[in-house]
Image 1: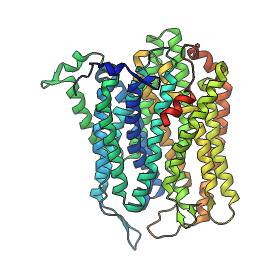
Image 2: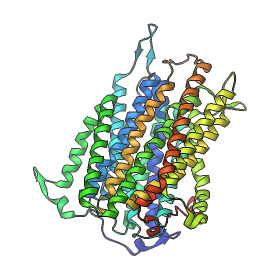
Image 3: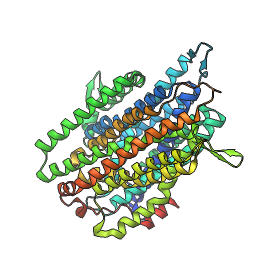
Image 4: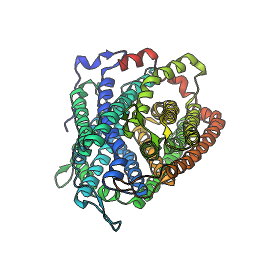
Length: 533
């Protein structure tokens, strides 16, 4: 992967008041998230309906996969910070993702439940499936944190457009997710699983092409800090850069096995999380000034609270997805809405309400709440969403639950996401010491990894017995199981949200006026509306 530090005159131009490179990253991330969420929307259904996994096994596999997807950016971020630079890391990750999604398109034979209850599965197809997941996991590890870091590098410190740029970038994620859940969801459940997964792979290929074509617009950002260090021969005549790629590819064997072993993933998460925390404490104590130390502490507290939010929010791909399929009335006239389509509500609401939230932050001016307050509201919103679901189940009496309650739940969850996720990405770049921005972006995603695994454990509180093709699900039993889970999640969200709001003044003090240095305005309404159109 050759260096790309030369600039053209076009690379200095702007579009809608932002560097052109932002929009290259916007479309790259849009297609990458198209592939990621298109596949993820189908994953639990593919496991439970095609390979006849139990709810427990399916949720744990989804949780382990998602946890590894978000844990690997810690390593990918470190390698990019130290050696590769963000641009090279993104290209390498994107190539792996294209290969992984291509492998997902291979279905193999469907599982069969025998008369004695034994389930016979296509072992070869499952191993191809697991290896494809490992390619995707490693690919996201190199791409996810580093593409966000390039966005941050496009803006100088103190540039008031930085938060706006991150929100525009975040819109690309949700547009990709919106299209993917509708297209891939329909193809997977109505045409064939391979068609749904294959469409996701085509999206990733488009993302790779977009990034390679548009890298000239990055104004020299995202390049290796020491190109000579990368070119040094370190093993068998191979350069350090080549060795990094070779070791990464060999690590696929380890990831391939780990994705099939949930207990190993659990130990990895605890070990990696502890190591990251130890490094943060060491860096804060030894390498930081007082202001840097306090800001790093504030960021770490925010990251810890984000775990609670994502553990609740990520029920969308397990318990909420299965609830929609099994216990919800999905009929409109003579048509039945595919269960995966309801996942598109989140992305649709993001596109609808991002301008509204941006307008609110702008109108509040100096009264605009800091990140801790916004995180607190995010937790309250996600808790309320589950409270509405629990109430809707109770109010349904006999029969399936009205889809209106799930729509309302996704609405509140989306409001919570708008208060937390784009704000969190921006604050990682603002509160982190410059030398470890990539690492801290990785830690942000590592926290999400832990939350993903916790989400799968929570989802299993509402798991139902194995159901083979054609077997009828007990609707009332399903409703009772999901009502119990959703009520518990309601109390968790409300309680943790209130706690965070109470301690928010202390967190604001630790930030040492970072909002005054870089105004906390996620975007102007005009910029977001133009980005959508």
